[in-house]
Image (cartoon, rainbow, N blue to C red):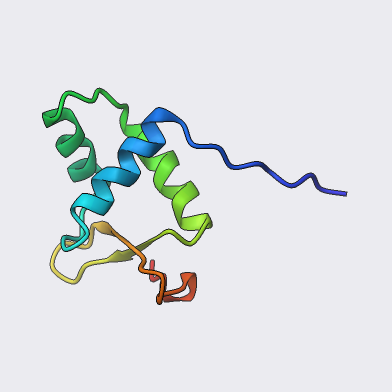
Length: 89
């Protein structure tokens, strides 16, 4: 039997979530999220941002898709009326 993983919010995870929420009108790459955090004095590793985004996608909080213009995955926050089925990779 598989154990259910508990989800807890670390300081860095909260900072990534806040950054996405504050920029909800913009679709950002993981690097853009990291840069925005860095400009506010938050030091966070690239791999931490990626792991956090993967976890948020699993939870259905954000979606990731490829923007036509750049072929780079971008992230945006899901609203309460959207579902994880709206995720495009």
